[in-house]
Image 1 (cartoon, one colour):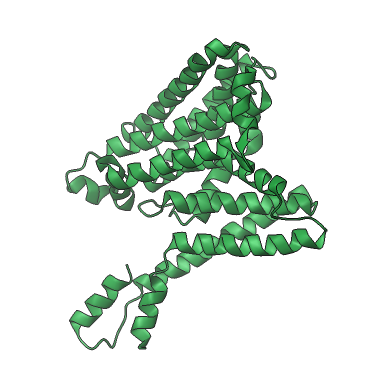
Image 2 (image 1 turned 135 degrees about the vertical axis):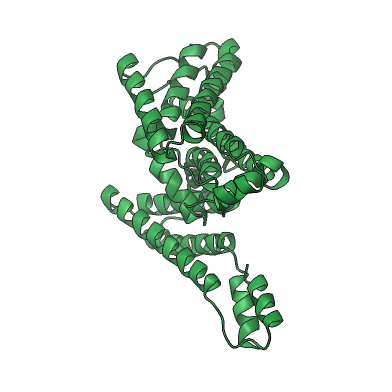
Length: 344
């Protein structure tokens, strides 16, 4: 087998496959560590804890993936999470008849916030980092002014969303995976989804190609805020009330970005997958579960997360450099072109 063929086959292993290989490795190591303290990693309770830990972050990370693919960011998501939980709980007031109204209000307000973020980024040409940071601070100021603690009440029927499951699989995780599937189909099967990749790959090229570059960025921000609101609804279901700090205490802005990056999506935009992000979310959930069983110091948990993120980015960066490295000594220009095509 020639060196060129070997190199080509190695590069065909994309970032999503690497994420799931890494997840498999984390599961194996985690199972050994948990077994060393007399616990069963694959018990129903532990599997349920891992999947439960995936659901909230998964919602936020799916939306964050869409935004990052356009080359933007959304730092307002933790405050959208908190606001959605409060709007839903205050509207429901413990009455099952108000569930639909509370859910629609939370999602509608979140969509307006995402629309505002998208318009600021595209029409006012404010960097996504600054635009969403400002929006988040505005929401935070509102929450700090209007709420001094938990508020509202979620009816028991809605609380079942966060408490029930099919065997060891929580219903909330099933819903999160359904949302991830819809996001995947949106990116792969719709024109706007294709334009999101195009805009993230090169805004100038997309504009010169005749694309309306504002639309995919706005849509991505709207969907990101809506998925953050879904996370807020899930947290309200679990807590039974709305909380003005549940989003910021969870650190869902940085954790969602970390999960997206860990899943192989480029921060510069234009390359990445929803399923890679879900793999990144799963790695964090498994790590958190193992460290909780091992009673690892909470500060050391952040150290481990940081090491994992840096290692993942280093791997992806090294692969990208290898793909772009010029190759010499090809038998012919045609062979050289075929080799470059095979590494894409």
